[in-house]
Length: 338
Image (cartoon, rainbow, N blue to C red):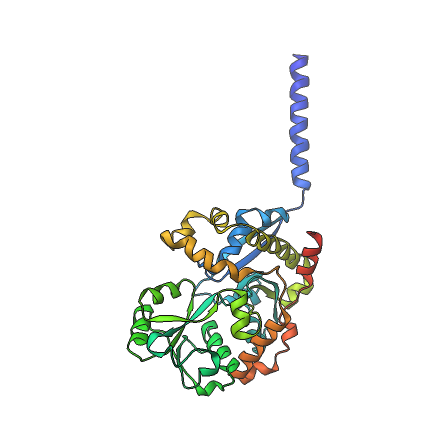
């Protein structure tokens, strides 16, 4: 009995010590990251960071949320319901012009991840940006990334923005019909929509903006696209949040740029891959070059995008583009991983 009592005493003492240790352990910090359509191919880097445990390795709990139509993302960011947002860089310029101080702390994409296609009936007329005067380009809404690309190309060709006609998108079927019937000359097509239009046999490539090389050729500089941005006040108040995200995404970019498309695809959850069915690998291969980056914002790319946005809307001219991003956290992450 004495032996049993001693055993039970030791057992209870160990349990008590474990409970005490658990109670004394500080809770893991929680970071909420809102993603602009997590199932879209442009968002796959966040899945890589999540699936490979890069968030967990930071000692924090990162909750990844998808955008909600009924909840404006900026409202959620500004009132603190989310800590960071994964979306295109132009939001930082647009929102700063509206008085909302946000900044990109990681730059993931450096190309638009799009192809500009010219209708076969117009390809002899429109061969380069200098030819785009009087062209009709399908690019969607005035503030969309696709329209920014159309504007960029027109300006790069030496024209004014009122010297071409932008048309909205009516769905892929109607867009293809407009191109075939001569009602439109070009279309800005994000991955994987370009495959659809080419499959219709009515278009050819005007500018390949899926690769960094093609983007530099058409625009002259990189095009910052997918970024991780936060409220500037939170960056100052809790820089560790920005650093955790920078550390994880720098690792994700390194993985993306040092592994094959097949190896990357193996890390993507099956329920996400099924959105593109048997074409997922084909779509992924076209999107991977968008992330040929180490996480830093290219200064010339940010300035170029700002100038195009300001030309389209004078209210953006008041924005100091250098306040729309920082490379401090990515530089620290890169230094630590050498």
